[in-house]
Image 1 (cartoon, rainbow, N blue to C red):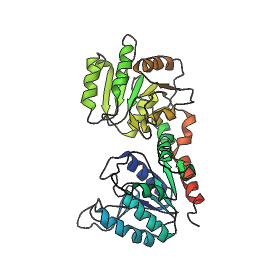
Image 2 (cartoon, helix red, strand yellow):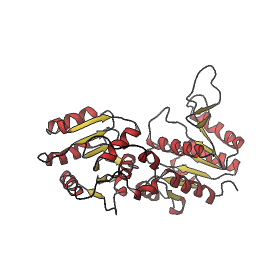
Image 3 (cartoon, rainbow, N blue to C red):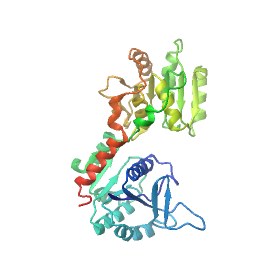
Image 4 (tube, rainbow, N blue to C red):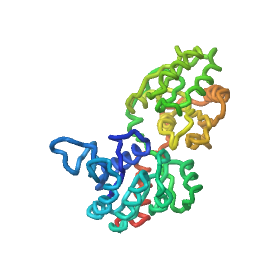
Amino acid sequence: MRIAVVAFETTHRTARAGLKRTEALARALSRRGHDVTVFCTQWWYGPDAGPWRVDDDLRYRRIDIAPDLPSSVVRLPVQLARFRPDVIHAAPAPPELLLSARVGATLSRAPLVCDWYGDEQFDSRLLGPARRAPSHTVVPSDYVESGLREDGIAGEHLTVLREFLEFEAIEAVEPAGEEHIVAGRRLDSDANLESLFLGLAELRREDWSATVIGDGPARGEFEQAAADLRIGDRVEFVGDVPREERIAHYRNAHTFVHTARRESFATELMWALACGCTGVVEYQSDSAAHELVERRPRGFRVTTSEEIAGAIQDSRDLDHRTIDDDFREFDRERVLESLLALYRDLGAGQ
């Protein structure tokens, strides 16, 4: 299938989770043998820099050399028409470029699928029309889907497409470390590790160790918070380690605790649960994390630090695992098959 992906910015310019998800899908489809090109602002430079660039098995095509939105809006439809895609998969921000992709889809006679993650920043009067422009919109969670429904998008135009993981990668890594409890996420103001630490402080007299995976601007504050609660010697901050090392920690740990205030999809929680961890999630109104543990026998949904402590204690009654086959529904191939089936249902390639 010939797939055009439209993203004004890429992960070479921003760390936004939604773009990481869009590029991950594009790269996985490319590695599966599909003809995938990402149309984006040029991020590669040098004397030999041309309009195309291949990076990590994914082909990029510049819309414009600089991030000039008005110029990109004008250029994109013609570029898409010349590419002749079977389907166009576009990020929603900025809305002006999504509407431009709609024009390109019309010229190409191809369906337009919008990958709406929920972490986009909008400052445009065209947001309303842009929401209605795609043939269909995919979202990572029920939480994001409900927000779009409230904004007037009909349910038949929305599909929840979860993020994916790779069970082959999990099975290839041996458990490592000695931690009982683990948490993982970017350490910013939304990470809310104070809730976890207050829960752990309730268990100060018990035998446990905890590992925090991730880095960010609030790391120093969290390290100080653990020290102030006199649990700093039992909480290890290991930083932003590679996926293989994260898997090793998750396969060894018994319980993963998620407390973040905002999350369109709890990626690290998904990986940890697939690695066999029991899951404790502090419910937050602006987070989808609880969706991964609801109605699961190895999951606990809580609302306070005291309940976090109680759930950690209760989780000890569950067997220790290093893999959970219930999460094979999140495996890369299953998620890609769902996306390709959606493309075909919309008429791609016909």
